[in-house]
Image (cartoon, rainbow, N blue to C red; front, side, top):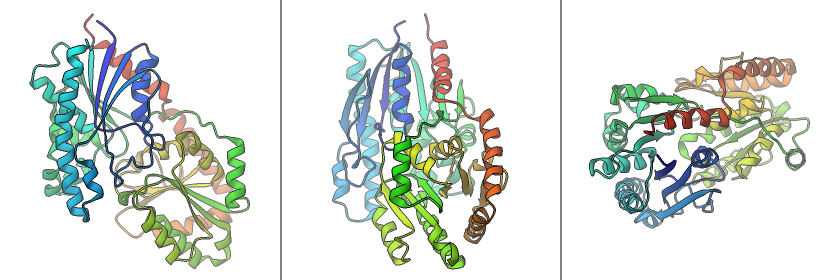
Length: 415
């Protein structure tokens, strides 16, 4: 059987975040596969791609189309209406992908059809119902999910509104891969599809860091990090990423420890629709000397920003075990985060980092621990030593991660 694969995806490649989207098809190219990647792109200025140029990974045949009506998201004035419109657009997107994928299936003999995230997976499930993917290995892939949180908190309206995610997870593909990103996707999969023939729950890979010494020096000089305690966060500037929490922590720290105010710097790496709101928050607190918006940076530069700073801050609403946290672990950073999702699998309080309950006001505790780091430099050394020992046995490189995925997929091919 030919080693030719068709990816069907509702999420496009990104240069400045979520590298696994691009790394996945490239991994198949690197292992001798012929790869076609069918993808829909959000062209609105309210989405996650307005600051990203279209990417064409080497060796990957990209078939890119725009979501129907996505331009309307720039016109609709109210957030609720935009959310409704976005859901409608995503439903249209499933049928767009079915249409375009069917044309490619007529022209190519694919061994594997790979549905990426819920829109891509729904499209592949419909192609199966229409008899268009017979004798092909079908893969469904999810990067994580909010569904576990909705289920555990009995937010039944949210579950109902995300029926499209439910239907995607119900699909009995030959292989389902869920990223172990701390959102407990394995829990909800066991509830929705307990009889899936082959479900894999894998953490993303993280390569050994390659910081650019010149860039690190430039960052040090630009933000005057030498002699200070420096904080950094790396994320899209969206509401649930809760960068505002870190800004509140910096404000409280400066109020409670004014003698250290000029020793504290916080770099916000990332871009998004909430940037203006966050900038206004910083100005209102009069912290423009302490807090700096770096903006979006290419992924290969992220390690240099992590290298330049002391403490990685991540206080998301849902789960904090994304690639930024794993990269910060590789970079031997002190971690400060929340105990939600499966984050506690990675961070043990005052052993491998600092992790705080998300069901109470934790700001004062974070502030006290930041002061402790300044006053007790040996604490940082001890934390990093424990973190390195833990990560040595729990982190994959990207090569290890994709070697395992491709091995499993190829084992399902009928020769």
